[in-house]
Image (cartoon, rainbow, N blue to C red; front, side):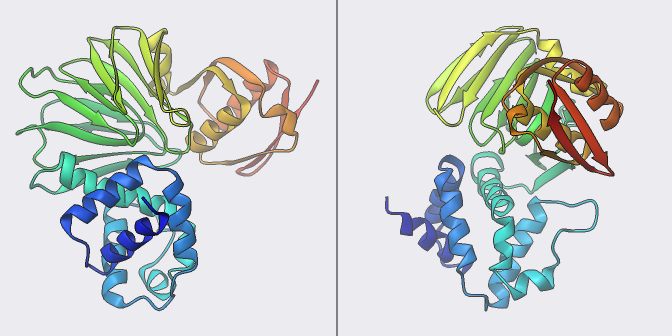
Length: 325
C-alpha cells in the first residue's frame, strides 16, 4: 500500500468524507504500523494552516474526549484552530486518541459511549468496574471502556500500565486490549505494561490463567509467568518470574529487572513527574535490578546512587545523571 494512501485517508476523515470502511482501515493502520506516525507527522507539519472551523472542531473534540486533562490543558481550542502546523507537536497523542476512538467504537464499544479514566504523570488511579472487577492504573496510563461494560462484553483498552483483579464470569471473558497485544481472562489477577514509548509490552500473571495474543502468536500463562512482546521484532515470548515483584508499584515501590538506566530514567520521570537528562552517555546502557522505595524522587535516587555507578544533581524538577566510577 502506497504511503500517500495513509495521508489521503486521514485527510478524508478530517473533512468528514471517509466511509466507515475507510475509517476502520485507517484505525488499523495507525494501530499496527509505527512508520505511519512519522508519515502523518510530516503531513501535519506541512499542512495548510487555514483549516476550516468544522474540521478543526471535529478533530479537537475527538482529542479532547479521549485525552482528558485534569489540570490546565497543554493546548487551547483557539490555538488549535489557528494552526495545524503547530499541532504537529501533538501528533502522537492525536494518533493514539484517533486509534482509541475507532477501536472502542468498532472492536470494543458496541452502541454505548466510551469512558476514559487517566492517571497523569506522578499520579495513580483506582477503578471499580460495573462487574466488580478492580483496576489500578500506574502513572501516565489510561483505561477506556464502554458505558455498557459487562452487559454483553467485558472489554477494556489500556495505554500504560495497570493491575487487574477480575471478577469471575465464564460467560463473559474479560479482555484487555493494547496497541500490540490482547490479554483475556475469566477470573484472575494480572499486570499489564503497555507504554507506547517503550519497546516491550508485557503481562505478568499472579493468579488464575490468561491468554495473551499478539499478531497471530498466542500463549496461555500460568501463575508467575510473564509474556513479553517485542514491538521491533514482532515476537511474543514467555519466561518465569516472581509475579508479585511486578506489582510493587501498587504499594509505592519501584521494581526493576535487568533494566537499563535509560529505561529507569524514563520510569522515574513518569512516576515523579520530573525531567531527567544524561550528562554521561556511558550511563544509559548500564543495567540494574532491584526494588527501590518510591516515597520521593530524591530518596529513590539516593538509594540508586548507593548501589550503582551513578550520581545526580537536582534543581527543582530537573535532574541530571552522571557516571561515577
